[in-house]
Image 1 (tube, rainbow, N blue to C red):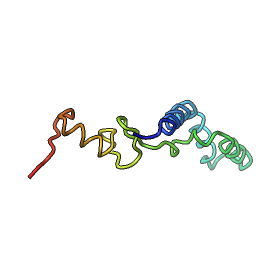
Image 2 (cartoon, rainbow, N blue to C red):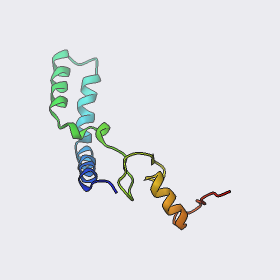
Image 3 (cartoon, rainbow, N blue to C red):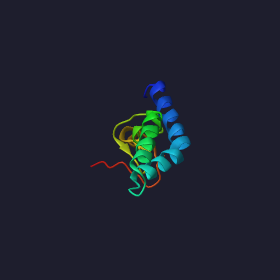
Length: 101
């Protein structure tokens, strides 16, 4: 099981990204618009840089919903390989059969 603080930190990041997504998108549109004056684009870039770092989508870490493990994460199932193997052995994942030969 991952540290609770790490999982909570990641959840705070998710909430902040959702809250600031529209503002970030608007500022990036201004920055990328070549038709606007350079000064206006630069001001938008400074505003974007002044926003919290954790409001960037890149800062979110995919974590297992069962254990909180950050590595060996299957996006489709939203869990780590270890949790998948455990639940698969118990028969809790539909369509998954642990192979043995």
